[in-house]
Image 1 (cartoon, rainbow, N blue to C red):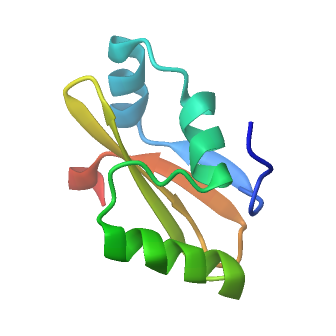
Image 2 (cartoon, rainbow, N blue to C red):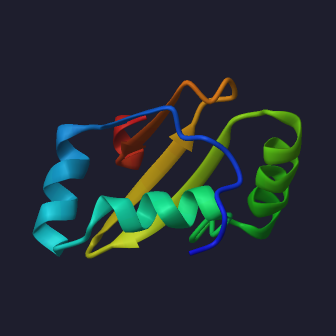
Amino acid sequence: MTAPLFPLGRVVATPGTLNALATAGQDPGELLERHQGGDWGGVPHEDALENRRSVANGWRVMSSYAVGPARIWIITEADRSSTCLLLPHEY
């Protein structure tokens, strides 16, 4: 595991995301570990660069992971009070 780059705060997930994770047999902890360690998943290169700046400056951080047929976003708020796992259409 890579050392965490930032705290996650309170972790929450939408029902749709929980269903997608269960259907795919995916452990959400693995995705959270990747997110917190700087593996942003399938975000465009420009967004990965922005995430690095966001970690350094205390801004919002976003990752995107393919889970089965679904895509799951993970967003950690700028104040690091919370992290949400959600499906893109739930944003």
